Image 1 (spheres, rainbow, N blue to C red):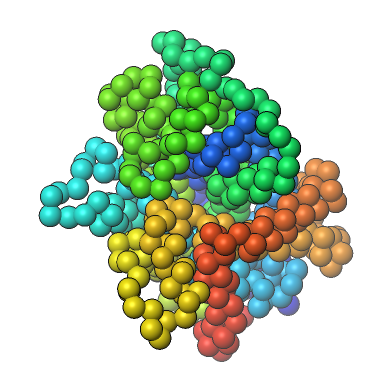
Image 2 (image 1 turned 45 degrees about the horizontal axis):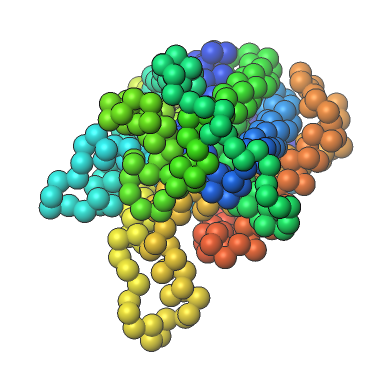
Length: 492
């Protein structure tokens, strides 16, 4: 039987070419994408008082940090390509591990790429308006597909190149966010009075409902904290660099997100923050654009458009860099066609897995755009009422919001299951070397599990998010027959 930290001696492996800086930039650069430039408006709409808004961002950060602190133990203990797939395989066996990889491909990872690309396109059309013969939604989809295609090609051409793009882009985006935070204090343009109200007018059940609705967006903004673990096989000294990158990465992210949120509210009154969450329109309805326009006028809109496009593009690159390692690892274990484990002879990258993920992300973008562009038929004969209602709801929902909820539901299920594997492996393999042990164990992983269950339950209860959650669940369950159809007889 193979040990958890090794693969079969004849199996193809990936070279260790990424250092500690690249590992940290994978965490920070993958997470800071579109969320902090768009989500604070929806948070203000759902939780229209500052203390609640701050609490939502802090709680979301603590929740994500609890997951990162736990997964750091697993990554340092089993530094193999695939990350959570490897931990689930050792804790629960091949079927749950395969379902994670299947979910990554069909729902979480490719869906994240499609969502980020939608955000990229949302700002792209401000700089490059759609031609007269083409609708705005179609032009956004074209821009999103182009962005996905570019990062896919870059990462096929080399892991070093993908890592270099990640480091360079992360430096630009973090510097840009820090500049945004400092801007109102440098030029003058904010007021403490804009931050009112601090407390809610009344305390009732609507506050909890609003907090849970806002939390979906906040967790999307933090999503990506585990992205370094699928790259463990390609990181030098993973027993040190994986825990450090995740711990320091989360500290940076929570600090930056909280400071950026407070800066928004320092400049924009609560009503303007909430109004920036309009379901129609592109950049003029995004909170970062409203913020910059208030401070710098029209030039500010162009500047933030360029920054957000860069930010989402680097997050796209992070997903193209990390996600395919899971499919590569599954194929190496014989549970996907051998094509997925092919390493390019010249570039030494899992090129086939990278290409497959990019193609599926493009398909998701096209389908999501069709739901927005094509209205449901006027005649509902022969169509179930729930399907007609869902189509009508999605038709009125921006592409970004459709994909975001779709991603978070599927990702939360498997993040939760992965975190619970730390309990199982401490029992099943107590003597396996653990260079890093989860701080606060067992309370840290338990906090993440409890928060995950609460979020999943609320998403299923909420009518607006239920359809995306159901679609994601159906795709995950489709992995069960896929497991028996796709596994190979030559598996190790």
